Image 1 (cartoon, rainbow, N blue to C red):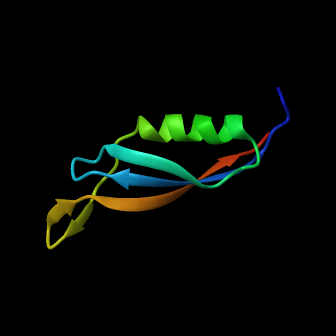
Image 2 (tube, rainbow, N blue to C red):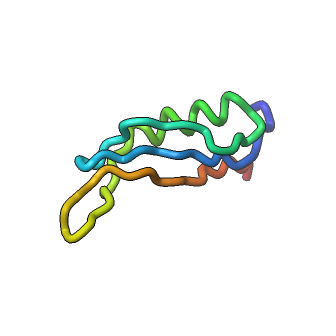
Length: 70
């Protein structure tokens, strides 16, 4: 609708339970609305936590969220 495209690069702190504890924009898509929508969508997701010696632990992950008009 607004012809906005880009890539939002996000950093998410994934807890040992797989839920997002913190989130932030590492690099903007250039559009505040897209970055905020990506943060909101990914913060609602559940992830596989990092494991060290079989034990889940909290860790930061970087995710690219691509916005493209087809």
